[in-house]
Amino acid sequence: MSRDDDELMRFAEQEARRRAEEEHAKFQAEQAAYSQRLQDEAEARRRAENP
Image (cartoon, rainbow, N blue to C red):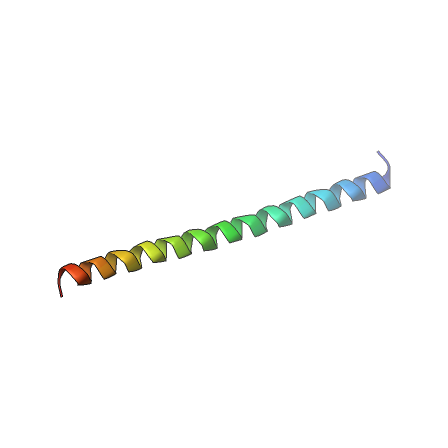
């Protein structure tokens, strides 16, 4: 492989890693929001059942 090919491969790998990290962070944020919503709903039910 040429030096240019090596640089392109490195760039592609870095870009793929960056995108994967962004997707993972987005997934974690969505999971945290979902978990919070479940907790909020459970708390609202508890309060409705025990005023």
